[in-house]
Image (tube, rainbow, N blue to C red; front, top):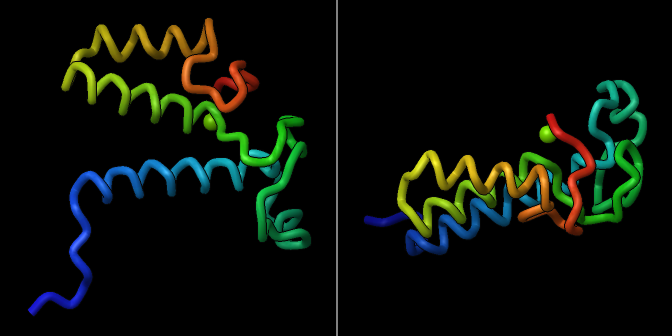
Length: 106
Ligand SMILES: [Mg+2]
C-alpha cells in the first residue's frame, strides 16, 4: 500500500530544482556569516542585500551552475564539452544567473 502520494518524475526533478534555488536564495544574503550571527538573526524569509548586495530571491553561483548542468543534460544527456561550455558562458556572460551577471565565484 502506497503511503506517499504519487509524484511524477518530472515533477520531482522540477521540485528539486525549485527547492535548490529557493534554499540557495535564502542563504545568499547571509553567506559567510558565522553561526552565532545567524542564530541572533535567523533567516525566516527572503532577504535582499547582505553579504553580496543582491536583491531578494537572487540565487548564487551554485544555483546558476545547477541550472547550467540541468540545461546541458536536457539538451545533450551527458556531454562534458557542452556542460563546460555552459559553465564558461555562465562565467563570461551570466548564463542562468538571476539578474544577468556573476557576483561571486566559489
Ligand atoms: Mg557558491
